Image (cartoon, rainbow, N blue to C red; front, top):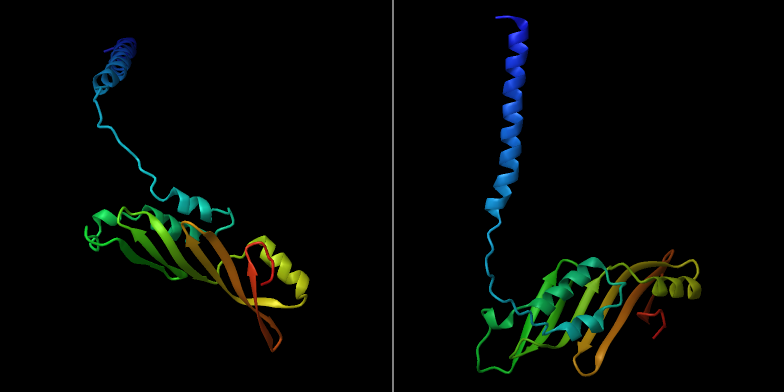
Length: 179
């Protein structure tokens, strides 16, 4: 066998392999495109008002995730659901806080009481505290949220400030206004 024959033979084999792979690459996707009719999906946003009322954009991630869990809770498929009751109370917990939510028999959030400890404070609150209490440090904070489907939402921060051995407690709203 001469070297020329070997090169020509290998070139011929390589051309066949490339052409075969090209052919397979073009034909296989055409077999995988089967059209199938999917069932219609209906999304019901029962608790969009709850989420919209709470959305300020400054919510810490853990608070936001737990509030979304409350809004998406499927009451009718839960263990506590029975047709005879008009009102249901469900508690949600994470290490940083908790939410007690009241639902109607259709799964709509009627009201909540929410409490979270040591959350990231909004800029308005931090600026108001540092302006009014220079030299003081926020040692602890508690974020309280009360939602009512008819009355709206109230958000408060209970803060414990510390300056050396001195301690004081103050309350603000979400905008940094002292209460």
